[in-house]
Image 1 (spheres, rainbow, N blue to C red):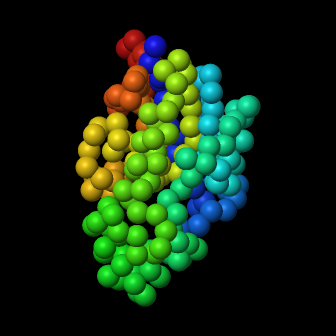
Image 2 (cartoon, rainbow, N blue to C red; image 1 turned 90 degrees about the vertical axis):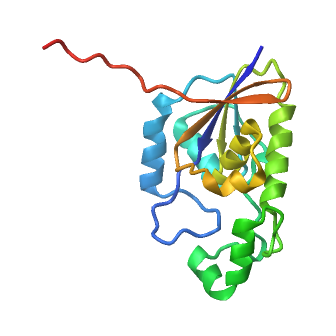
Image 3 (cartoon, rainbow, N blue to C red; image 1 turned 90 degrees about the horizontal axis):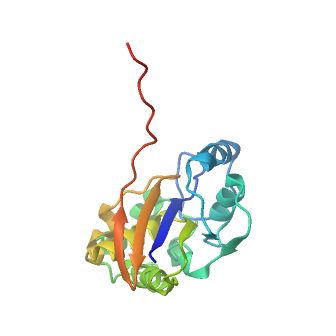
Length: 193
């Protein structure tokens, strides 16, 4: 039996300056998450990252019996936590360039891209083969890391993967081998002319 994993990227606050930080969702983000509830597949198991953003998204989806998974936590931003990308660029431009180009770099003293990729890969490969359909509400960095692992891509590919808020990544796997699963839109036939 294969695991059918849907990773849902958490809803995002609608503020202009995005910060490397966690916080509760605002009303607009909650409404968007509630609207997405009916579009997701049923799942035997539902996991969430321990952040307020991910748990708030899971609650807005109306999913019950959700289990927080520490392995799905966001990238540890160390001394950059709470700051915007522009603030970091203004005060630590060389560190930012290093972090964005070298997967082993962690100039902020937190976690490197390589470390989050390895952490997420270990979580994926530890899912039991009889897990069936699984939904996980995750941070964007976790979804990126999962795609990198599923494709066997180098860690440098991490920054080339865009995962917008409330988008999904489908993975199917068995015995540590993962495939990226593309989904079709629900079909609605056109009325006859």
